[in-house]
Image 1 (tube, helix red, strand yellow):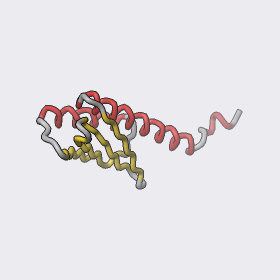
Image 2 (cartoon, helix red, strand yellow):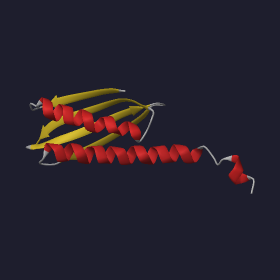
Image 3 (cartoon, rainbow, N blue to C red):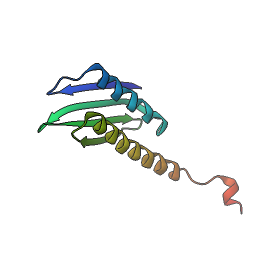
Length: 106
């Protein structure tokens, strides 16, 4: 799994970069087929904006945005949104696979 942190229109310390990397590494537990994660930190209208783009197998792409005054809170909320999307997708894929045979033989 590749993790890439990009910064636009501002300077970011190594602490924030490492914090973002540590947070998005945990997304792997919600969906196993993640290939790459891109975190974009941007400054728009005086507030930091965080965007996370996750590329998964079978051309699945997930995007989450969040804007807040605090950089750490913005990263946390964006990761929470992405985790929810990945959890929903995993449930949808799991539901398509059908029921085990022991449940249908009742």
